[in-house]
Amino acid sequence: MNFTELETIRTAHRPRLQIYTKRNLDDIPQLGSLSREQRRDIRVVSEVLPFRVNRYVLDELISWEDAPNDPIFKLVFPSREMLDAVEFSALSSLIDANADAQAISELVRKIQSKLNPHPGGQTTLNLPRVGNEELWGLQHKYRETLLFFPSQGQTCHTYCSFCFRWAQFIDDVQLRMMARENAKLLTYLESHREITDLLITGGDPMVMKTVALEKHLKPILEPRFDHVQNIRIGTKSLSFWPYRFVTDPDADDLLRLFSTLVNRGKHVAVMAHFDHPRELSPPVVEHAIRRIRDTGAVIRTQAPLLRGVNDSSDIWADMWRQQVLLGMSPYYMLVERDTGAHRYFELPLEIALDVYRGAMRQLSGLARTARGPVMSTGPGKVEIQGVAEVGGQKVFLLRFIQARNVDWTFQPFFAEYDPTAVWFEQLKPAFGEAKFPFEK
Image: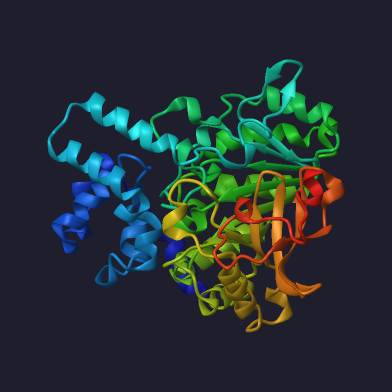
């Protein structure tokens, strides 16, 4: 892209962030290309799993002639296979019969409760405390890193259908992790000097106005927080609304905030979520990336491996290659977590390893910064390093690359080989051991 093209994007008429949810599904013009049954399926499943999509994704990223098999379509639109067949049938029957709202709501809550709303101890093991008070809206799982869920950032420009934080977006407020103010965040940070990294997460913090983000981040510049060296911002906005960094009314203010943080000695990392190479193709994405990098912030990329979306070594190699070319650093290939619609997207761990290795074989060292496949489990982030034969037994070689107990970090351990396993809890310790080393 040349300079003229970049400036055309910058000075063009500001695009409007037009949002569609389950309440105005029928207003999405492209859905007319689907069958009546397919549209009905979307409506039924959107009662259980959150649905939200913007016009940018609809117009720029989805190939409608390939829907519903298009990978970006699968990424954002619910499918009936995401629910148990019996439960889908029961719910659709209620909706078709125009049942009262309470009956539908009771069934929806029952189905949602079976979908493991908060995996990995998010609301139990990860919840920090001061005395007897639980600090809802914070999570402190790893020694160096604190997660902060500001209430203004607990939605997204578009929801991913696989999202492991889907429970943040449904109508049950008791399931939402969020903090309405930052006083407890600052108090906790000040008293925990082992914390070097603050991760602003959600939802998506980039739905916030810059003035709200400033209220949370500028206090971190005070000398009492000099131990907080890294500020991470988890976001899907470079994929689903890159105009956030280009033509939004406060886009320039946001980039000035990044520059201020960097110039005052903080390392700012935009943790960008890209699931498919097509998300990199619109010209505005490159412009947004350049504007972020010009502030001194870095961009690291991550995504889960998803059946029907990116379950190909070639797709990952292409995506990582493009990301490096644009100045971003591949960070993680994650395994789809055991929550929400995971049954629709999950793949056996051995296949995940084959996809990862197949991609790495196609890349230079600059793109081999991505770690994977990685499972974000209760004890920590478990990397699948390989399948091997040890002492005559076929095993998975595993290690923690981040752990709840720092002593476990980078310690290898073994699990029995299981070609059907899709998640860590399905694995058994190898060599007849009753427990994994970290369980002892």
